[in-house]
Image 1 (cartoon, rainbow, N blue to C red):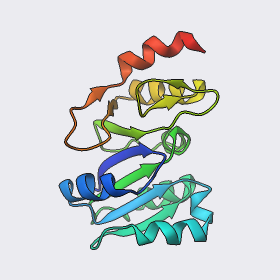
Image 2 (tube, one colour; image 1 turned 180 degrees about the horizontal axis):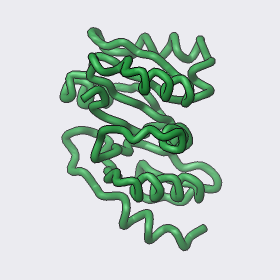
Image 3 (cartoon, rainbow, N blue to C red; image 1 turned 90 degrees about the vertical axis):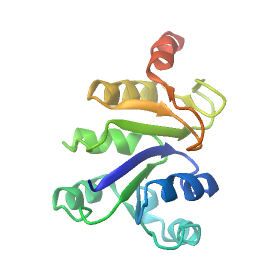
Image 4 (cartoon, helix red, strand yellow; image 1 turned 60 degrees about the vertical axis):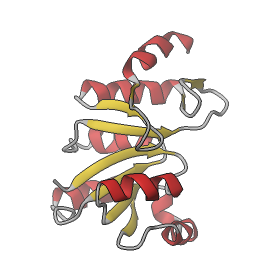
Length: 166
């Protein structure tokens, strides 16, 4: 299976990702899917410094990812996809890609104006809430778990309760 894990985390690559998820899934290719980051050579070079040995890091636009995915270019890797928010993840789904995963991991979406807090580490805007519920309707389980050793929390019931707060 080319895609081992898909994670939404606005911090992108950091110690928890490297120590837990990458090692556990034997990730050798990390792809950040984001239109802005794919164009930002400075940010990408900083992110590459934090990439663990033995793994490669790329940042691709939504369309760039979909094109390469459809060509089967990731098939020989254990791939971790990282999204800074729901926009790109929803975007690849809207372009017809159904990731071969049962679960999408949500690690961190910090609070900012216009968001409601789901728990200590995850806050969503109305659009993000709708995006997540849409992804769930496609068959993905939505799991909150910052660190691999934490117990997973199903976000869907929490998202459904928060719908009325917008």
